[in-house]
Every structure is written in structure tokens, then in C-alpha cells.
Length: 166
Image (cartoon, rainbow, N blue to C red; front, side):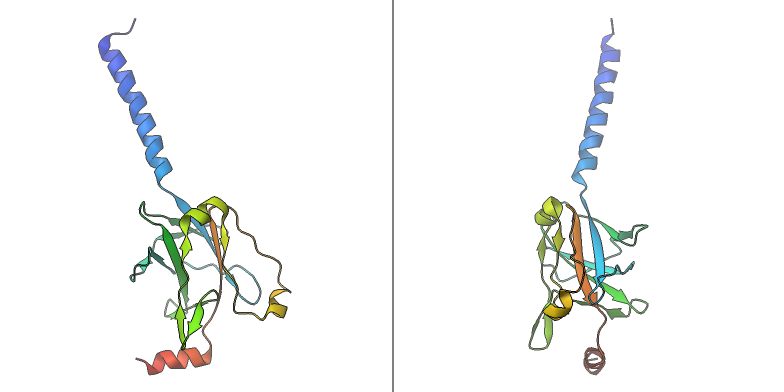
């Protein structure tokens, strides 16, 4: 027969294990897969720029690079929507997301719901290609918990606009 002290210790130990597993379950992550628009090939980068819930400020260094070149993003508890960009040329230039709509020369970010990404996965549209060229690419799918988006480097015109606005 266990004494009260032993029963109390066993109960505390079980509660600690249960609470630890609950905390581990509340930390959600998604996988980011960034593809080159023309080829559909994976681009591995450590310079993701992430925003949550329509906030203006990017949250840098929140993505951990996986061995396969994808990124692992830990989500804040209050995150409902996300937009992701990435940089190149030693993080001095930002890729153009191919899901962005152009309005009067400005690119408008598209936001994606994290509940949909977690439940079924999301592949952002590849608007950088003509439909005939897009049909030549292998179809891209996403697994639950995966966000796939297409990018391209900035063209000379876009780079010169950036230089003239400084």
C-alpha cells in the first residue's frame, strides 16, 4: 500500500507529464516550400520574411531550414493568417511572390489562413507564367501543414524603380 506522500508524488509526476504533452501540442509549425516560378524547382533560403495577422512588421529569423531545403516555421499562438516573402543576393533583394496582384505598379500581398494550411495544405497561385507555360510544369501539391509558394527574382525594371525611389 502506498503512503499518501508516495501517492502525491505519483500524482504530481503524472500531471507534469500530461501538462508537458499539452504544451508540446499547442506549439504548431508549418513547412514552407518556396519554388522558382519558371521551373517549379525548390529554392532553399534562410532569409524568409514572415508576417502574421495583417501586421506591417516582418518577423525575421523565425524559420529553421530543413535538410531538404524547406523551411520549418513555428507559429505564434495568436496567428490566424500569414504572408511570406524571401530575400536573395545576400538578403539585399526581395523575391517577387507570384501570387501578388499588381495594382498601379505596386504588389499587394495575399494572405493565407493558417487553419487551411494546417488542415489541408495550400499551394499559392503561380501568376508569373502564362497559362501555356504553366501547363508544362508538373502539378504542385501540398500536404497538410505545408505552404507552397512561387517566386521570381526582380527584373531590371523593378530593380531600377527601387533604386530611383531611394
